[in-house]
Length: 238
Image: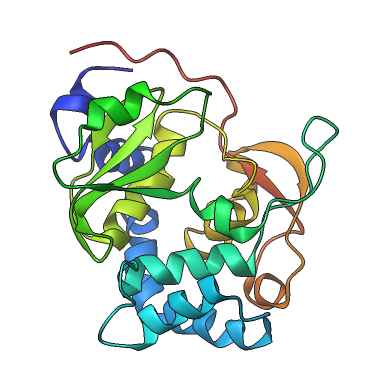
């Protein structure tokens, strides 16, 4: 990875726009708050109301978030993880991961004053890109970082939707596949919101999520695809 990603914010967005154009790059921030945020909230009526899901719903619906909870925008993204939970794993990882731990594969919280480097040093196994949210509380985030290959790339904006938008785009810019526990979420976003044609990406052979939510809104073929699955090159030090 080029050191420029660690030094200059906005490079992920810039490179994604070069790959797919301005119209595609703008779609998530245009569509999610105006259309899909309320759609995912409506779809929760058919789900088992766990305490975690109830907290997320309250964060979206209320002007005041649950204590120690995420803001309404990030909560709406995490609700999508509950709507499109992880698929069953293969023999090496039998069983099905629940939505709660899968959410930790998307975003993690780090309290202000805690060393980011210590967090990076604590990573013991390879992970696909995820957001690291730094702030006083989960609902008051000052900075977001994309953690990839044990490096923290600063996001351009502290806004939670903008940071997630940048996280999604990072998969294409760095040519890495989706986290297997979030593949249903990312596939849905890729084909339904970003309208990235499945022919532009390499198939991972997975089946499309079959929940009523995705079936109703998806406008593409039933077999979805991942971004390029080539391994990420080691990130160079600045």
